[in-house]
View 1 (cartoon, protein in one colour):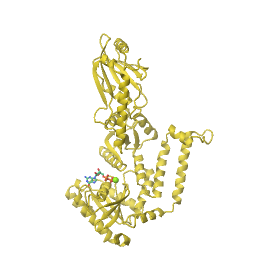
View 2 (tube, rainbow, N blue to C red):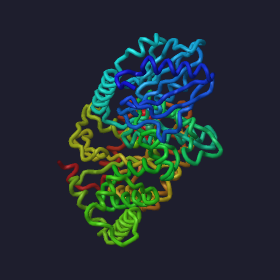
View 3 (tube, rainbow, N blue to C red):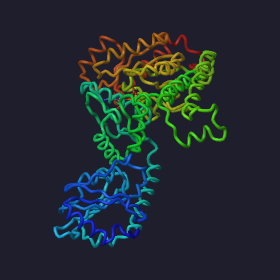
View 4 (cartoon, helix red, strand yellow):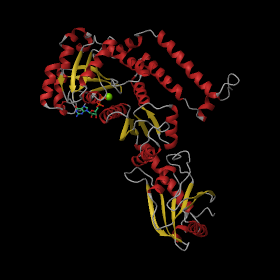
Length: 529
Ligand code: GDP
Ligand code: MG
């Protein structure tokens, strides 16, 4: 066919004629050079487009194929037609009505819509006359549509510094458990600097082996991601390598699971040499069974040097290299002169007292950290230098300075492989002068959480560091409950969202550091200057 038109009048006419004769829908898949790639014979109600391997071939790219098909009645493009358009990223989805006499009636045309938007990811035009359709300049149309998509992608790259995700929970747990777990996942995403756009929960006893949620649900999720302009899916459970691959290939979205996200967070937070090695070890061990061969990567590692032994596959080479690295790192950990790093860092911090915020994920640690270190909140607080995103020097009343540190949160069911890495990130708490143990007072599980935190601290012998218990989110419970908890546990009652509750905390910290038992152990330099 002439590549300049969507469909020629002659072809449209033969299609409707044949279609009417058979009493079935008839469809053509056409490429941009006007070749017919496939002919699809449907039934009276629809055509089925064969599985094409993946839903879309890229953010801005199109599949380079369009679908022209017939409808036996005057019905416009239906939901299935439009879903196929979006999932398979066709150039166009066209439906031509086959009249009773076999001639073409009206036509509807749909194409993908560029841009971030709420609503449908497609635009439907028509019904229009077939003449309008057959006289449309296809080349010009597809060119300008692609340009729009490309321009939009450039804007988006500038706009979004952050990754945008949809969270997916699949479990047979109670609604309550599943909800809590998703809350925690959202808090983790926040720590990882990922924006959460939506959450999808699915309850099922047995997960789908390939896609976890099942192909139907995955389609729905994918459309949702298109609408929200999300770039990634985060699953609230562990995925196998083949599951990650299957879902990523079908959707062209980045796919990660809970473990991988936790690893990302640890990687951002590990400062000491040992912490960094532990995190890398955990990452390598996690990736080993999930290694995928990517062509570019492969040619990079094998390029030029040739493969080692005969019969050694590329995959084996890759695995061996990862294992070698693991062995090397494990050796290095053993030989690390313990404490050297820590001492050096303490010197860098010029002997200032270090106040570290610990507690469960979602307790409000980062919110409190930001409030306490935000120069706008307390007039006397000036932000001095950002040592790293989670450590800041803060000026307290009377020209005193402290270093505040936010830490990785504790979490439920920390995957076994991550325990060592997690502990390594906590090692740094040894150099803390004071711990602020933040507890979410509104969490029904708060007592177990407190106990779990204390247990690990004492395991790591960090419990020698003085601790202030801070009950946060007091705005969420009744004043009576706040009183009750205060009487039982002592502790400081705050709401990180209510400024007026914070000066009290500052006062207790100041007193503890400079007048209490802690003060006696502070280096003289910190108060003298
Ligand atoms: P982290 O995981 O301990 O660092 O917790 P975040 O600081 O990220 O806070 C987790 C969630 O709790 C966020 O949605 C905060 O907005 C919210 N939050 C923190 N402090 C308070 C508080 O005092 N009151 C209320 N209602 N919400 C809070
Ligand atoms: Mg946090």
